[in-house]
Length: 230
Ligand SMILES: [Mg+2]
Image 1 (tube, rainbow, N blue to C red):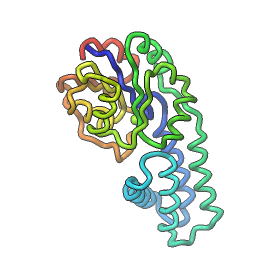
Image 2 (spheres, rainbow, N blue to C red):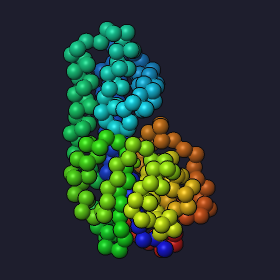
Image 3 (tube, protein in one colour):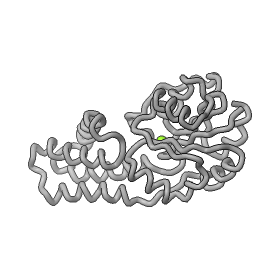
């Protein structure tokens, strides 16, 4: 029987990837006079992948990668004024208001009355903490865990720390790779709620619909009714 629900945050409770997408669109326009858009995307993604080990996930690492990629693609021709515009793009992302996804404002407080809720996210500590504070949801979670990676070992550590048995645990999130697959592999339950944009790095093969303890739903409002069947 499910007693503890783990929630991913970005693109599960609030919009995130659309902010990256809009920033990247402006970044492409800024570099358009130097380079075709498709090549800008490929080069930026390659820089990000190279830098993960150093910077981790989040906007600040993204900012450093956009600056590095711009210098590379323009062979050092980019001006200080243009670099300043790129940095401003990232600073706007960090200041962007938190926009909750549909149903979140009603469903999360309702679930908090009957279940223990954990928020399990990854990314910049400082930025994630400010988003959680700005979301108005913090009081409904018994704990917040901001991890540098969401893999099996990380979930095991978190669940052990909170004394959570896998039989009683379900993780809810938009990423099969980070939110669902590691938890299913450990023996927990997973509910996938896809967001309309999936970051390339989070790509994973689909999970068969008949997988035990796995469900895929379109919106959060469907979650409460299916918890008893997990
Ligand atoms: Mg997410």
